[in-house]
Image (cartoon, rainbow, N blue to C red):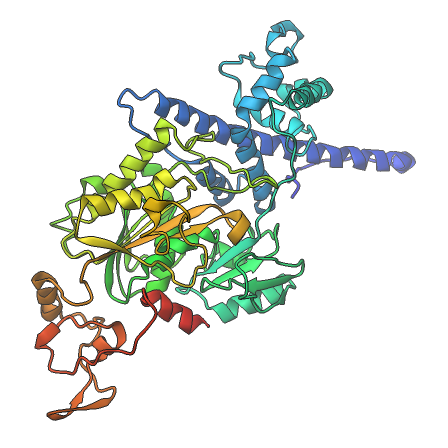
Length: 576
């Protein structure tokens, strides 16, 4: 998408032979200015992320501090305020992520090339000072483009001109480092398919299918349910073989300018990210909390599944990220029953305002070690908050794991809580199975139950201490599931299908809400010793009744179902 330029040309007929060269120069100028615009945007985002990371690492308290706004959200803002054309958003995203991930390698190559030893007089005019300990963000972005990105150096700034003049020698330094074995040999990027979730609050699966066929010219293929490894041929699309309401499009499909995406009817959300809300599967009229909500994909997925019946409170403690969350709630049509709360969940009054909460989604800060496979050997990209890979035994991971345990245990003090869904975008056991074991050891009110029974990839095998929970939890990896590394577990209050606390029972009986599920209703007749008796509709559907023994209808034991069968299976059945 070229930049709009106002140009005035004065061409006389005799000069027509020069028109071709003039037009070529204009096209080159537009391309160079567009490239510089992308570099400037990427530099701003990279500089902000690096500044936040430095501030967090120097915190005297030693606590992990989130940046005010992550790189991903800043790219989103660039699209929303039209500072970046939608067609160029993928390129901007690649530049930002690549520069952040490869910063150390790029700076080392520049050092070995002597870039930081150049006197100021030998630099292009108006070039900022170059310091290896605090390099300009634009330098990191341009180095990435020259060495690891597009391998093309386009732009008009002094730093672009400098790197362009030294591109060959910089590439030689990178090749020498790889030859010495101090840098990874280049491997082609592994690209994931494009995953698109249908927001049921605004559209339907069938309407979305017709939209892709009509607008993108893609041909629909039935999903292959024999494997969880996805293969999408160019020109086709399909539905996820396991997860409902999720379409799979060919890699590289650009939907950033799609009208349904802009309207919030379709959500660009990774496959693994959809696991958490499905694992929670709150039934109608549930009262829910998302403890760490922004940017809101999991919150709004939960809202889409609930269909406006119930209530969701989404916690986000950072003001800038809170704005993103609030805007997306409105965009996706969930503002009637989803409320963003600018506060820290750890400081919430759980036995006061939130005493009626029944379901809670916990997707806390983690190492991000499972994010975005980037090479053929499945190498992982670290979280944008950390700006670097973390070792599985590092002190940082241990600190994060302890914070995750504390968050889950704090949530479990909610008096009416029935279900907890816990997830991370990490592949480290310290943040996954180990966290589950610690939670189980430190309380006896909740148990770990099977999450998403139809998901084939379960917990780590062959580790004795995980034997009891491995079949209950879910994992995801690029190799087995064609998605980012992920983990999800589901906890349920022990005995929650057999009894209900007195407070919850009283709230149900006192409620005059027309949307509450009716505990009565004739759906069939059964014969007992006293003749025919109506079957309780609520017990028949959910396997439990809030009136318990006081209910005047029959509580017939339902037919045997698969272990762990819950609301998610109803979703699967409806979708199939």
